[in-house]
Amino acid sequence: MKFAVIGIDHGHIYGQVEGLLSIPGTTCAGVATAEPHLLKEFSLRFPGIAVRSRESILADPTIDLIACAAINSRRGALAVESMSHGKHFFVDKPPLTDLHQLDPLRRAVESSGRLYFVYFSERLSNPFDQQAREIYQEGGIGELVHLMGLGPHRLNAASRPEWFFDPLQYGGVLNDLLSHQVDWFCWFTNEKINHFSSRVGRFGAAPERNFDDFGDVTVTAESGITGYFRADWFTPEKNPVWGDVRGFIVGTRGTIEIRRIANLSAIDSTDSGPCMILTNDTSGPVRLVPKNKTLTWPQEIMTSLQQGKNQLNDPDMLWHVMETTLRIQSQALRVK
Image (cartoon, rainbow, N blue to C red; front, top):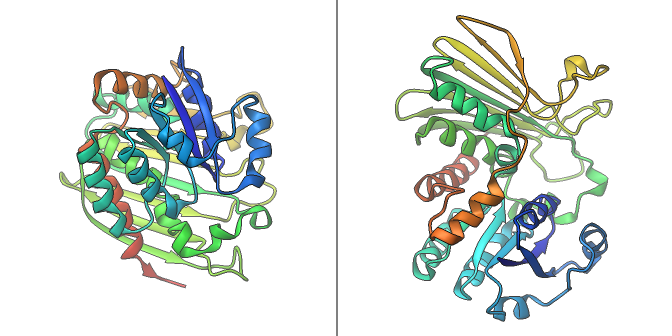
């Protein structure tokens, strides 16, 4: 497979490119960006990848797939343009920033027959999630009751680009950060959300900016399984990681906690890395390590291209996740 990169405005592009290059026989045919100052770091990470224009990449018939982490508001149009040139598209979250971008994207996917992948890195790059879902599916915690996801982040406002603080370009704290949790909830439960209530606020993480630094949402699935998800930009400066991101799963006979980034309760020991804690009616608490640390999403993309069917994101659920996340953002109650 041969892929190219259009848009390197968010650091998630490095995980996307590294994953794609891990697929045997895969090469990157070029990178294009509207922000030339970002090329230096990209070229240091990936020496030898040619800098090309967007037009030359799209016109190249040998390129199968476009990887994209452009400014959030530009991602929908880039997907439509790429698929109109016969390219599959692999985009960082959030894939869209406005509900009006949804229908053109859907038409582009349907008319082109190309595959559309979204990189929800919080789940796809964490080996614990698949393991947790297997434990649940094997009856390890009984029937699902509730999922909670916490997504604190460090803002580092001085190093953020101007577009990040423009609501129209950024798309909002819920659409950006909590898109991870909406995807996680629907993927883990295999159910769609039929009710939600969301909030946003500005509590002063960037007081001179027009910027929401807090958001949360409660959701209910079709079967009655509930969820609560919170994101904010208030990771303390003394925290050794950028965010203590966690997932909590409650079943009728057990619970699972996923400490995705670090185990802060053991930060001074060798057990300070990400972990998963299982407690149920027969054993626990048990601290689990990943059964398989190899990321599966690169091979899922490759298999998808070979078979012509999206193995990374269930298409029907993906449309639901994108639309629901945009509605969660647009319908949020402002609390401050």
